[in-house]
Length: 392
Image (cartoon, rainbow, N blue to C red; front, side, top):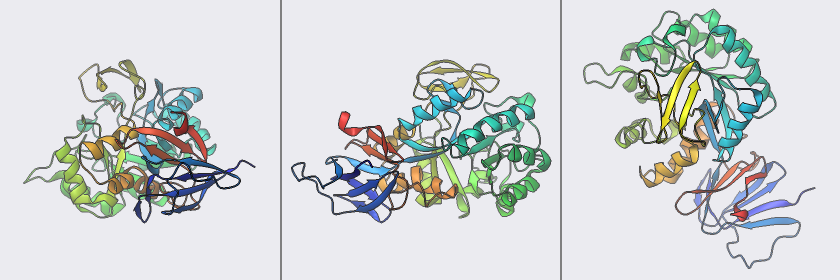
């Protein structure tokens, strides 16, 4: 058997809080102990039968969990081959995302069914944490980077067809719940154990409240692709922020949200109800250029993705390590709150809090090592180093 790995000396974010001298023990794929009595000195003797890694001067946090991601590394989850999808998964793992849900975009139903089959195989193998269907059941008024010609109302029978095609791996469906069939589709998803998310919506405040009462529990990239908050027409943003049953997705790339909007969401929803996502497309971790997002052409320039026709923002090139660093160093958020938004909260939404999202004993050994400036230095998934911090 491989020796146990003992990670010592880092400022470690445990479920109980931050400890300055952490000690995390990894045996096989899981964490077996996590305490604040680590050994910081590099001159201390290694424990017999262990591989001791001194992480003094670093942070140790849980692996990141991304609920909303369309691709990366030059590869697409929405149209690529199995190898393309694996390339995207590897790219995001190298940036700290150890648990990832693959998101689709609006396509014809038959294409989405086919895509669900491919992605579900990878989820069954453990490479993905499931599938998020973003579109086609969204508002033409708030379509963003989705093909207007392919949009349709959320007919519960068609929603059920996509869920069934995912073979138990459907995790979330984004809906404009004000459209005909929207509330019935929310109820169907709840019955099937799938998250109903309000997004790409032109709903009023009252319509959004009705969707939440029907069972919707996530706001897809809050603020983006929905009416702005108004003092006479508070719209969906207010309804989603004020209801304790809702978790709000935020894209913290400096393009999708002004820092003041991000802080407003944290203040009103609270750190326990925020999930940072990437909404990444192919260019994440890859570079500028021309790409396809579903059937639409995208131009990425200076790291910002926009549709060639119309100029709408088309996903992001974000990786979650950058979202973490920005949240702490630019937005000034407490490290514990950022860890919750990147790990614990999305893990809870997926029903996987006993497996991922924290450094609790018994969970998978998914973790990220950051330096004092919160730059990524190491990634472990299931007890194996994806990026070994000892190798620089």
